[in-house]
Length: 428
Image: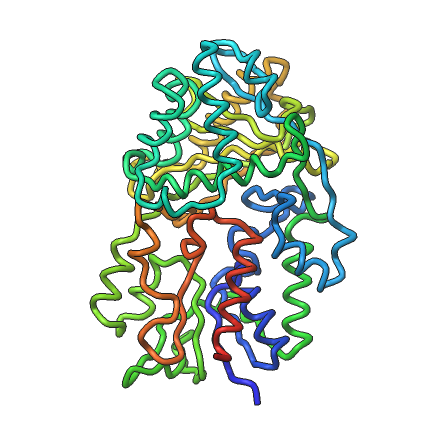
């Protein structure tokens, strides 16, 4: 007989948990605070265009994602596209992302180019991350690429993503990002990325339908206020002031929410959750009448731009208008995060017109900003060892978020893989 399991959060990880539980004959009930499933992958209506609030793409190495597409009959909706990268540096748009572009890059010596390229190549070939686990990332990169390549190609990416956390990040975590993009190449000179027809919402709605088809329930606009723990065992949850009894609880909400949700956890466990750091994001989406560039990803190093880069999404997934995502990452406590949306919209309009002087005010159809307080965990050296175990010392309680597949960066495929494994673990 199946167990009643509460799943907290309907992002990709929470949906994957419920999907696996329901298929295994259990009775998952998913609690989601938002009015839609998806978390950071959720879609919204952008003046007639259904699109994710935050950009997503897929690599040929995203095996867990591709497997679930196959199970849901969605494999035929996957599209692979040859994409380009660029670098905005010294008020010049330059090609980026392959050996020829590196050799031709203006503003960097030949020695610096060689050292940068060697580091990227060897990072792509490396498989064992453990030796990098306790190594600090910026020192590791500087030792490989040298001061010149660090200043030109890396420093601003760190400064405008991690701010004062920059000097204490795990090299293993940064390496995994280099490797993922490096392995998206199907030749040394060509990069291939993927998108799903209809965007991530195609997968989200299929997961939701499959969960419900197999007897699961998804409760939207239903934040859990508290997880009930008594005598070392989980008893259920409180939602909307009502107690609901469950055999097991699996939480996939961002870890910073856990201490308030589960105040009855042992004090040492609460302290470990409370010590974790995250950065926030204000992500501006611009809808344009003409393209910005020909690149999917554009790194930026410009003293007038407080962003590490931008994503021209429609150079991956073709659409009627041109969609550009411009993420502003910062610690949630940073004063900039309290600035009104309009301040970010004005910056983006200014930045895009600088990159492409042909853009006029009338080419901007609409701009919209989305905010996420806990967008990115800060993974310092030895990060995984400081996380509490997924299966907590409370009978019937599991807690995880995107932090737990360190050193991999947050991604849909990784969340699906980890969520399904958690669901299988409740049978052990």
